[in-house]
Length: 413
Image (cartoon, rainbow, N blue to C red; front, side):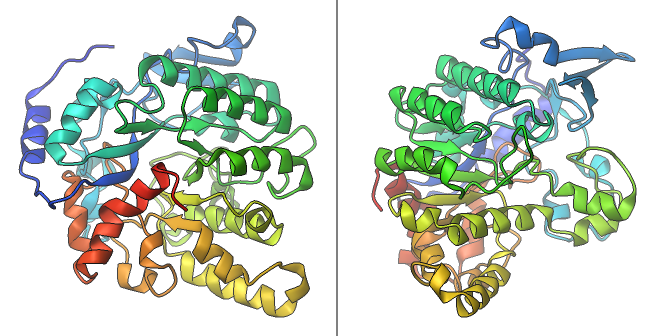
């Protein structure tokens, strides 16, 4: 893949240099890389190559996954991408001209090295005045979200991606870039093996899809006893778990009402009904509910959980539901589930949300800054996020932008 730089990209990078200096090291809980085509296939056993491949259809590259063509992402090669921050108007709900996402995107950018490798990413962070960043994949939602109950294929693709990360990034590049180790829970024994492999290579956090766990005989809660051996390993390891937005299967709720596509289309914004259905918030809310209600968070109290790129508008409703459940079934909980949430869960809100409302439910020491760079949904200058916490005290602002995530990375609970 070419690493050509065009004039528009240069303009974007110049805008980055205009960023502010907060006077302390900034820690970003949500950065991304765009996966090159060999990320999933370099270490994938040959017997699975036919189940995960890039194919040409009418002159365009598509993904063929587990026997079907996927339209999940329109450009799975990322040869061109939307400029970072180009969709801000949309996500702030200020699109009064009624432009489509394509119109808001404008001229796409050619693929840049900082999108997929650590050396140039670190130079970019210096320009952005960001000290450290958690880094997540972009295309990896297709693994558990699009492979049905093919558990062995899921595990093979997860490991291939993790092995590529170990090759190209490491899991703690210069102690400033921290790519996730992705773990699928579809098979508890394979999940334990993948966790052990990642820990041996210095992983500081793991990515778990916020969704029911897929399996040969249907989906189930991650709080069932079969997963306790996995959670026990995490509990002992002193790493944290990130529940990052994914294709969690909740898009089917919209499809019940629309009678449309057979799979989630990542950037389909053509129907206003879809904007009214919070499939991201519902997925992570249900995931956290299962982890609390089925006892994982109290059986393994050393684990810290991060909700990344799920927003936060789901939090007030979840607090009400937890209070109701506790009042109805108090003997089913070891302790007040709201207290469990507030002690164990960190939330990274979207910039367009009401941070003051969030702070009514989540302590300031549990709220994280997550830029989502370089996706189109992010802010072009990540530190502009600081404007959203203008009503926080200086101590709370520093927690949000720095010390909360730094503490997680340093193993402080």
